[in-house]
Amino acid sequence: MKKNLELRKVGINDFEQYNELLKYVFQVTYNKLNLIGWQEKEMKKAKQPTLEKADVIGWFDDGQLVSQVAVYPMHVRIFGHTYFMGGLTGVGTYPEYSNRGLMSKLLKRALEDMRSRGQHISYLFPYSIPFYRKKGWEIISDRIEYEIQDFQLPKYQEVDGEIQRVQINDKKLREAYQRYAMRTHGALLRDDLAWNEYFLWDSDDLMAAIYYNANGDADGYIIYWISDDIFHIKDMIHLTREARIGLWNFISAHFSMIKSVEGYTYTDEPLAFLLEDANIKETICPYYMARIVDAERFIAEYPFKPDTENRVWEFNLSDPLLSWNQGSFRLEIGKDGKGRLERIRQASSDRIDIQTLVTMLLGYKRPKYLNKIGRLEVNEDILNMLEDSISQQVPYFSDYF
Image 1 (cartoon, rainbow, N blue to C red):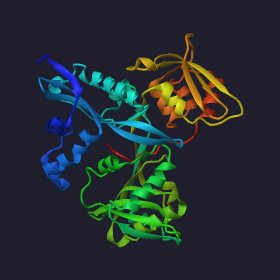
Image 2: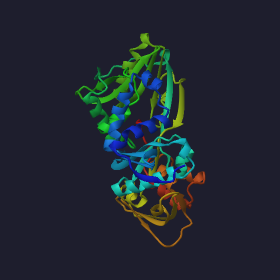
Image 3: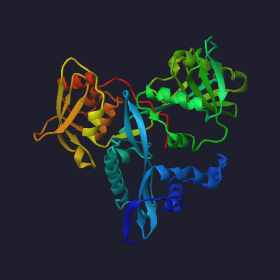
Image 4: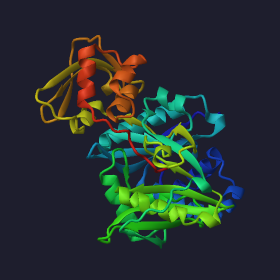
């Protein structure tokens, strides 16, 4: 093992090595590329924007890239406020360099860089939930997979709008998503890089349809493909009840062509209750994780619920990697819902870790539940104050990067 390891930025000149490490770690074989109709050169073209727009750092051994992480510059909506978010991806190390602490140092450096750029929160898709929990990330969203038989599809209902099939890169589809994301807690505000990642591993068979209301506004869409008598739904969004009905009318119109519908939903509302025949198969699993990068700055932007009086909480915060998130703090929440977190000298019996703090503030798990399972140590008065101060809505996140 060579000992002249160097941690530095991965630049465009390192693209071939970056690409090879990605392929090895995520087992992207030529067969897998062929299944989605790709050639090797197409993958390179698709991943090159990462190095051009993302912040990528890695360990080099005598010029050879052996470990890396990438951070996408992204924005997410959290209870009506837009946060600058660091999307962590491309995490990988060649196996002969594992168990040497390289990845922990890379993640710490990546978080330090996020802080300096003003990215006070980070999202990632976990290949190992235990690993990322140890580094300060926690689950904040779920994905529900469902299967509906053809005879269980909703019956046709009259709506004022209409459906139009479009290409997946249609401008109106992107506009509909932007409207939806701006009013949806937890959602990613997609730029060109995010849209590229959203469709990156999909085949050329994808299709889309937009629901337009009576005024011609795009109130929802569905992205789908049909194969082996199955209607596959990649994603479906709707801003109104009418749009939801119109999109399901469109799906049900394929009755004679399919045997079943399979898809995903990313809210905390199972689909079954909306169907007349609710006896469908649904499987829920954790999806994305998040981490607060800088607790003081995150709280300064966080929209707590307004109240008739100011609220105060003193607590001890722990963080496995970042010293600025460790110690005793005082949280003051004004009547207008603006929070202020400052470090204090005196110790507190109230305790919370950075993982629990993010899942609580993003609404994935409520304070009373976290207290019940031993993740939040506070008295009843503080518990009730936190319940009243944090909005009740689970994050929606349908992207993958």
